Length: 481
Ligand code: UN1
Image (cartoon, rainbow, N blue to C red; front, side, top):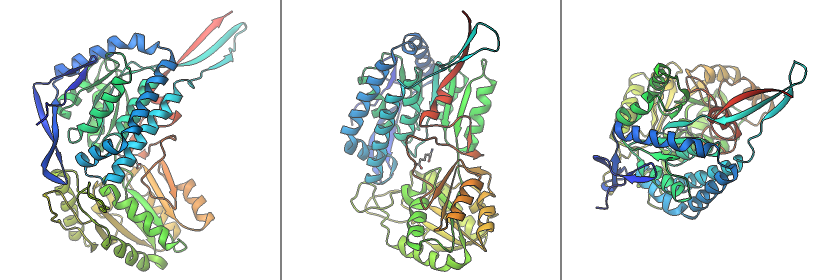
């Protein structure tokens, strides 16, 4: 066994008193490595280091930050096969999905490398004579980051890159299930030339490391991606703190995909299968409610079922696997529980839902498609976060739109149609943060805002230039010349 992977605190790889194994969900006998499990004291040391590094880093020449991010991006691209493999091995998405996600992380680093030199302000005349006004943006200070297990490198990248680009210091706690990809990303950024203390990694439990980050008075802001329940606790803790912290929360989804009678059937089937089941359905943007109008319903269900029966659920690293395992036992139990709930609620299990055995012991689940669902069933309202989708039959477009919007969430929404009229109407009237026409609800670009409405998101958007809304604070300066 290799030496445990350590935390990065104040520029030093620092051992913790405890470690936890990072297990491959495709093969439970394969341990990716032992990773440090930090303590509250480790968080305190990391925050102190970040605070000490902030004055110099926040005043560094933007181009110096540009060069570090660009160098890190180049290494991520150069190692995308190896890092994609690590990601697929620790998380269970397929190797091509893993490599795709690593590529996205490289693109995000590259994008924010360029953003460092684009941060402009405004000058405008005052309402008072002889006075000028300037509006500028400044970094916040120490940003605490709590990231989820389903995008082990892309989400850390899309929080760390803008934070650093705009001159903030960081303490990140990656999900305990998948610390390996975040560790590799932090190692790359550290070696790309970040001064000590600018980026700190404290791996470990949410209840210890996450909790201390939330309570620490020197953490200026918290960005979190995860469940609604935890998100609410994060926001409350951030407000109870003195001083209060700025918060950004990305939480769940119950994303609708509307399929209209006039849809191109092949496009609709691919869009639904990709959106609902790829990455094992473990995306907050997954299409978990497929809302289908009467005229195409039966043909659509038949074609989706045929497509599903041709998909290979197997080891994430095997060539030819379409869908990898569920991430861990807890998530698998939750998915199976919802399959039972759906049956008990009277939905028809048209495909899958059973546990699968493969060559190695892993958390394999046949994707589950429920039909004859109503929108008030629990399987249509609650986020399952697995390869389980509900098909809801509706009369027409108006009913489809009403059902699509009838949800506590509002992250992403899609429509498959060849009608410009319905596509345009849906884009305007969908109560979601992101709307997709003839495209899956999941799988977003890296250079445009990401986020939702209602119970899905809280605070400013992530990604693209909009990321500065969270990672900077505005200053208004008045000068009498
Ligand atoms: C995507 O669909 O490309 O946790 C990204 C999640 C989201 C990211 C989805 N924050 O699933």
